[in-house]
Image (tube, rainbow, N blue to C red; front, side):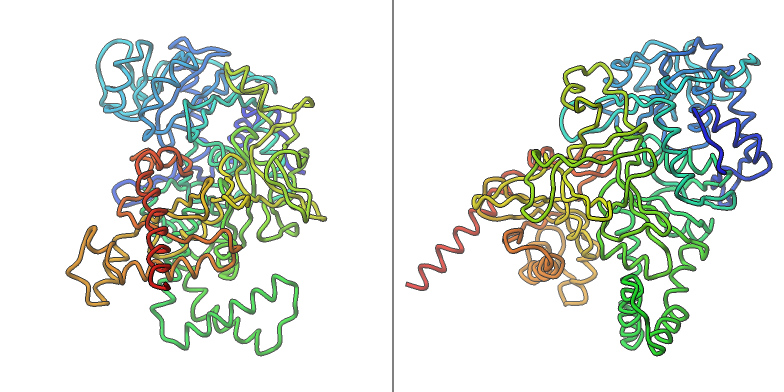
Length: 602
């Protein structure tokens, strides 16, 4: 029987007492992975709890933290939990939100990662600040992490009530100011308990951690869940070094969002495409065999041999590139492409997709061992109930489809100081209205069909959910990002963010190596390449969803240019602010083409 937790202090006490000698966090320093043990982490948390108390932090206070994943982040978090204080995490990259969030939450203390962040924050925040960079100095109100651990104040941890706030996580949102989501110890510990019920995580498991703990997916599913079972986490150097780090730390588990899985998929596909034709044909045949296995069809002897040969010559080498021990991959944050999920699955790495939001701590549904259906986001986790409201959304004639409503102990207490928003967010019986549209099949598996606010209606009355189209387009090795648009228009058009390095390499092989920049992206042969990519990746969609015109742009959507949220969702309004005229010009271009064709016909 797994341990049951009432709060995150229970998680801390259990993990540090049971797994003291085991490795917890790995950090790469000077080319070598250095590991912090559970006992060492416990010692730092106990010291930090006293240090925070010496700075006046007490039960009910809020401590704002601006830092990316690092050991000190987790230390501060568990030190706060032991004091009954709430942690308010922020991304280092989300500079424009810092002042609003710190003011909105009424932070008692602010913890910052670096001296440059300290300089910015100290200009608008006049309370106590702790800088994790121990070389920082300045006013008396500014101290360092090292000083925090040497306060010598011994403060035993309290046992927070289930309804005590432990995290105030601000959702980045695609419009307006972020909203603070009130998550209690009961909310998050219910998610940890549910994971223990359905998934056999063990103390010898290891992950490569790159999902931000400032987001509920990375924090609950990876940090708290793995910590609670005695597993270890290697902190990735950066998203650019994920493949290298996978090979070095040899994880058994991988937690990610589709954007990262897409990059891994593209890297492997590129590797296979460079092999000789017989190897490529072998892989194609093997993928057909694994598809049969997923459909519970029996393989012939020759198919078994094909699969074994492909595994020996190709799949095992790919797994070795992933470290050689990877067993499971968990996907969340957005819908993963079925092609990507099935491909990773075929390599021998089982993909488990789940669904949830910050407001649901975050897991609401998941696939798990012996309860898995690729293409779905799984069934409700223990204690959670999913309801579909067919009166909201575009609906379907073939099934009960509508807004997804979540009921359970994982549902947030509400948005901080947002009474009006709370009235809209909850049903009369405290179900949370997710704003996502989907349906439940006859076996209780949930399928997501789009984000209600993102859906739009074409002139012909057909509803389009752009996200699935965009995710599919991003599987192209030449497309980094995409935005599909068609609100009240006769058809869809798209902005395609080119992977300029990939396009440049393709162009060089085509004798176009002298071209670059706009001249390259506007070249007719490059446009023809992108048209083929569109046709290939959108073949499975309905006719009215077709993208009929497109613009190729050399700029990606990123958090730095404020076109992606920190959880990597496209800020559609921001993109349209910059590229609205480009999009409108696509409709004019199509009209001009149609008029020219009609003139020639006459």
